[in-house]
Image 1 (cartoon, each protein chain N blue to C red):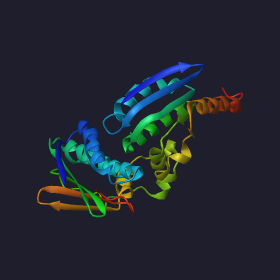
Image 2: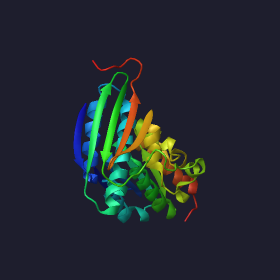
Image 3: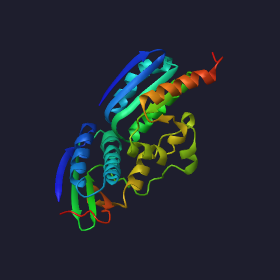
Image 4: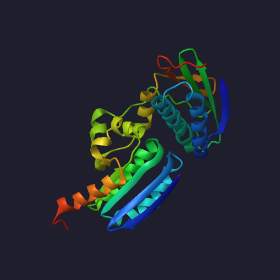
Length: 120
Length: 144
């Protein structure tokens, strides 16, 4: 499992690769909580995540709270079908923003800032 | 039947998944393999963290996979204190529809175990917990 964050044009892109389970989720969480809470727009590239257990769902819960708690927006791109199904089954899907590709995610985040308009 | 013993630690989760995936992939379709592997992972995680871990006990997890006529069966055995995940409380529909900001994450693993397989059976056999997870083979794909 690997995790990296890059920032460009006001958007933080998180790239996750591999399997997110009870072993890997805590260290990813520690790493992301150091950088994400200050970010207004966060795009997570999920396309290379091949497995997500409930420990990964808990990670998403924490990340969502960290980003949205500061008024930010979180978008997940490229979630594979079996993971999407688990998100649906556990009621996460309706509360997350999923898009097919990274460029869809960038567009979504641009739209979000346009919609916020005069927001602080 | 293929059987392997893993140390009861989080580092074993990936090797356990690989082991079960390799056995199940030839006979189940891809979504079914994913669900079975997820159920096994959730159960193994519970055993490592709650079964052995919270009591500070070192131990093992025996995983056996057998392909039979019409189904794949995975049996997990451990020597942690008794715990029956087949009757533990699942999240309610209200809990599952709550916004993520207000969400309590408990019970999701139990739900993925029970929903991921066709049959989930628990028994205490002597000093061991024995969990059996069964997934039916799809209509036409049978072992050769």
